[in-house]
Image 1 (cartoon, helix red, strand yellow):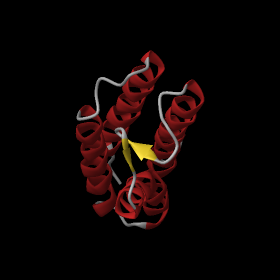
Image 2 (tube, rainbow, N blue to C red):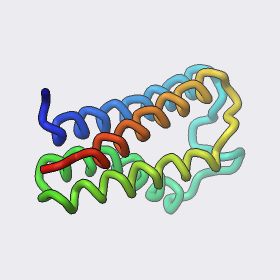
Image 3 (cartoon, rainbow, N blue to C red):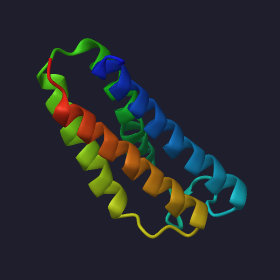
Length: 121
């Protein structure tokens, strides 16, 4: 069996790629206009906030490989739940593909919580 740190790191990569794929499809489908968020021109502050949110899975990947147990166990649980709650506020999305991908990300987040919860060092 793989080390729990590796499994959790893989789940964070999968979550990040799912978010990214949703954004790529949203742009190509025409459901999003470049430079706009929710129909208004995006400010630098909005782009900064989005950058921070999209860095979360990347930072979690690094933390899973570097932070000591049991702290990383709780960080995984808290951040995964936070992302589910945050994404619930955006539902439903315009495209069926987007709603599907968010559900997939919920599965990845649920697996993250489950693996972190059952993790015994």
